[in-house]
Amino acid sequence: MKIAFLTSGGLAPCLSASIAYLIDEYSKLNMEVEFYGYKNGYKGLLLGHKISFPSNISTKIDIIASFGGSPIGNSRVKLTNIDNCIKNNYITKDQIPLEVAATQLKKDQIDILHTIGGDDTNLSASDLAEYLSENSYDLTVVGLPKTVDNDVYPIKRTLGAYTAAEQGAIFFENIVNENTTSSRQLIIHEVMGRNCGWLTAKTAYYYRERLSKKEFLPELLEKNKWDIHAIYLPEESINLDKECIRLNKIMDQQDCVNIFLSEGAGLDTIIAEMKKNNEEIKCDAFGHVRLDEINPGQWFASNLKTKLSADKVLVQKSGYFSRSAAANLSDRKLIQETAKVAVKSALAKNSGVIGLDEDSNNTLRCIKFEKIKGGKPFDTNADWFINILKDIGQK
Image (cartoon, rainbow, N blue to C red; front, side, top):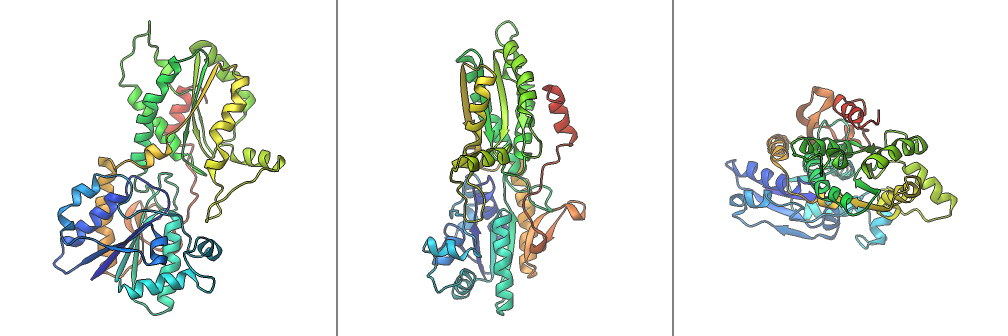
């Protein structure tokens, strides 16, 4: 049996561990298995860039799982975006990406393909599985849900999200000390999250949980200076004038303001301003606005600096730091459980995405591709989040 892996989209702290634990599950079976990886996601599949895993790979599980990133590489390629595939020379003008990908899988005689990625990755996997079925090729495609945003319907918890939140908290533990470098210091911690504020909220939760275990010296080190003073998410409207009144009081008292900002917060306002100024708005292959080009943190920094009379402003992004981490123990446990179900589903020839299904009492099961959809918002009425907002005086 030939089994191939493909990791796609942005990084998340689960890719290496997912490959490792899938291999581990297959290796426990009394069957002959060959493992392959398509380099850099769907790009490698289209270009026929495949690597063969060593025969002793099953003895190296712990080594693979201990790494962040992906041992076979990632890329953002949408198989139904023909123009983008042609533009990047993944196919020629007379080719269709789905057909090229399917032909490559047939040529390589792959029996099972495991895609590890977010909603975009698994929607492409769905397109591929449907195309193969329509063209009478017997291939099972089983996806694992990866995204640090934790915003995939109907999945309760995506792989790597909890690790990313924990790492974001660790990141800010160092950055927050910059509030000692200046009077009236404004620090903006920009966290990943285009349409969903879950990661920002959970990062804030973990940070304050860690902060509560830290000992302070009120005469010299006052805890409030190290706390979070505002959390801005895409799901919540922001009244900057009202917020500036509140934050100015904090600045006067603490000589600093610390803000956790989801990169998608206030995005509509920023884009509207850019369009008004005739500025170019760049998008990726999936039509998503390239947030790195827009730089939401800097937009908030420039708008708040004067209003808060800040002497110094610092914007720091934890995204790459967080998403590149190796999976923590909590995520490893979920990945191992997910891998077991994924292998059973693949061997039973059931294609879909393995996840904690909110439509089935959070049961870990194979969910049909057509039910997978991105853009699930964070529930800002969650008790633990409301408690944070109350604690910091934002609610």
